[in-house]
Amino acid sequence: MLCVDDHAVIIEGLKAQFSLDPSIRCIGSLSSAERLVEEVGRLKPDLVLLDIEMPGPDAFETADRLRHMHPRTRVVILSAHIRDGYIDAAFKCGAWGYFAKSDELSAIISGIREVACGRDGTFVLGPKVKKRCRPVVPHATGVRPSPPLRRVPAGPSDARPVTPLSTLSMREVEVLRLIGKGLTRNQIASELSREVKTIDGHQKRIMRKLNVGSRSDLMRLAIREGLAEA
Image (cartoon, rainbow, N blue to C red):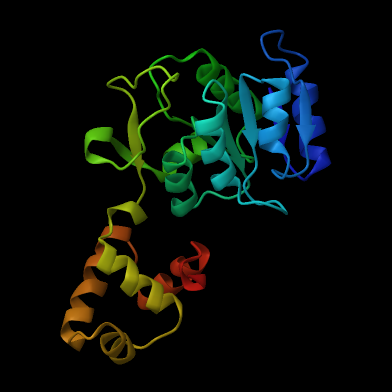
């Protein structure tokens, strides 16, 4: 396994934990994804444990490159953040799992072993990430890219995790994004060339789907998910 994280303490802690498990061997580490594709080509690890908020190239784009260039290597996301957009992006880029750094190390180790040994293409979630997601739906109704040629074909258990944010329509996401930017209902209606009552209807559906009780909570959620930066 190759560990990629810009926090040396995290990497050393993981290495120490992995050393106690003979089935997992850490063969290297990187502090960014900048040379990740090249290092995977050189070291040929079975698995890459990848942080997603580091200096340098976008981790999701790099994971997607790995999926095509080194399809035998499986990527597992390990992040300090549990965001709907991150979980969805991890799935779309071909990662095999998503874990929170706040998960117990034993749960992370168990999940890594499940990814390494799994042959049905299951997208493995850490305990805290799993709590964020709703029951999964088959890929037939999802949008995950086709797996690489050398990857074992996905089985019935290979499914897209459904986060609250992923239940929104494209229009609802756009309305939520504008709410996050601080626009009023009148300004959003003008921006999208819609009636104010139409925007009100979108907002009510968004609040219901996300189980949010107020517009200010919607604004905070949009900011937390990074929608206000788009």
